[in-house]
Length: 351
Image (cartoon, rainbow, N blue to C red):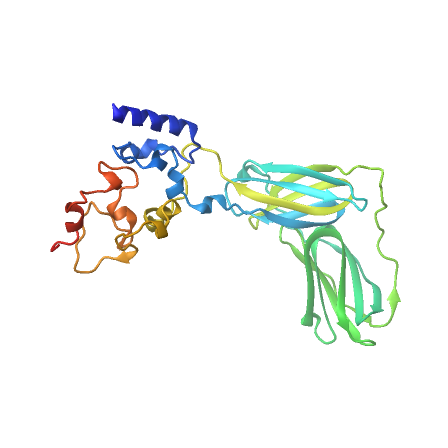
């Protein structure tokens, strides 16, 4: 009668408890209640001792979105699972907009295989000025979204380098630490979302005061609310995930993305190792400072001592689970063998 009652309690707990996996499918023989059951088993809390915190540590990768109407961001494809995240943008007038994003299957996304490098146009120095030190601002455009790199030097073009990984059409980079009156050679470079690279011819400028009109700036449209439109997803040859979208007004902001596990009944939880489950997990409910006099644990078994196969070790070390069965036992204190003498002489033959 007692066995039936305990089985009923267990079945109710299993139904009402959220499992990462249905442990009963494969481990019925281990978790069937004994005369002395372990409470976490009756409560359906297998993950308390066996579940690893690793499965809960899903990192959200965030990236900055530069100011503009068209936005392009690359992510590493770091998993074959589902992806979810958000796009959050704001304009110069404090108007915000946010959208949730979800990718159900990376393999089904269109493959963007552009082999043509971006075309660089309108390369020129728009400003040279002296603050604490001399700086020069270099501007250029590309016919597709691309990164920005400037190399410069008085003798070698590659002597100095400045880069920005944002994908934009209009590029502007300010180089510093220049010497007044000196002549510098510079070159600009851009890489598109498929990894195609291109460079401009080498050009020169002299470090004297210079101010030209900057590129045209977007007009403020304070009367318009911010809208996120035309969100698209692609795969690239470099195993990257390209996400693009547009906004009705110029905005900046950020995009966040993380992998999520597919919800399947047969997905197994990530398990901790034997030592963690049979020793450290015990201290969560049974602090070592309240146990009193106990047998030494977390020690390797002496070479001359032979342990019974019914007393499991963890990498050759004694743990709580060596003498106690955490799934339930026929004896009190969840002991695997009788505490009168049988348990001790299993290892201490001459006791």
